[in-house]
Amino acid sequence: MMELEKGEVKIQKICDQLRKETLEPARQEAEEILEQAKKEAGQIVKKAKEEAKGMTEEAKKEIARERNVFESSLNQSVKQSLDALKEGIENQLFNAGMAEVVEKEMKNPQLIADMLQALVKGIEEQGMEAKIPEGVDPKQVASLLVDRVLKKFKGEALQVGHFGGGVQLKLTDRQMTLDLSDEALKELLARFVRRDYRELIFVS
Image (cartoon, rainbow, N blue to C red; front, side):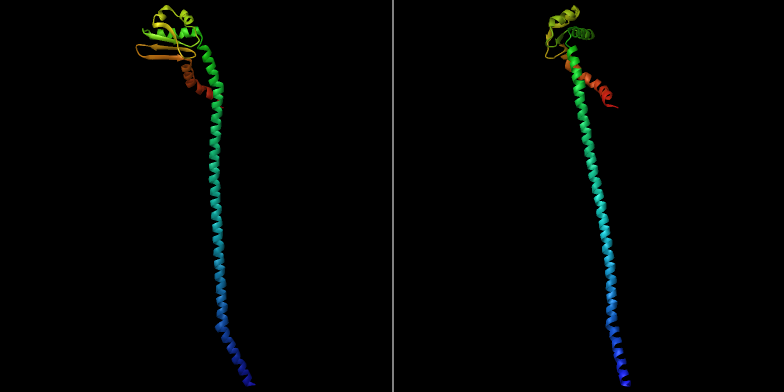
């Protein structure tokens, strides 16, 4: 009986020794591996979240950039459209209307004669050539001028120029022409009147 108990004790000791030398280290190693795996898994999840956040931020920035480009392009298109509309309105209403009035009035023989007399009176020197519009009778204009003014002109009293209305007065001694033709007047009026016209029509 004593021998049997001694044998069991030895077996138990051997089992304890085996467990201590093999099973315990294996379990401890398994626990360490599991703990390391948990840490790595946590790091992987953290990194994935950071990358996802970074991608989200970059996506937001890209969307903002695209929106800014779109808004800038839209604003530019709107501005160009408004400018084109203003120009169209200006050409249709202002330029066309002004041109019609100027062309009509600047073919009036009395107005042409008055313009010539005013120019000559302001200059008071010899050696001038006067041109009047095509389609206007030089004799009719000459009949409206006083003799003192007619004597200022060299050669033929009045010449027909290549313009639609108004007058051109050439100072032969100075090689200079005073242009009060319809085209010159339209350009002059457009330059100074257009700003007030724009403010009247387009400024709210």
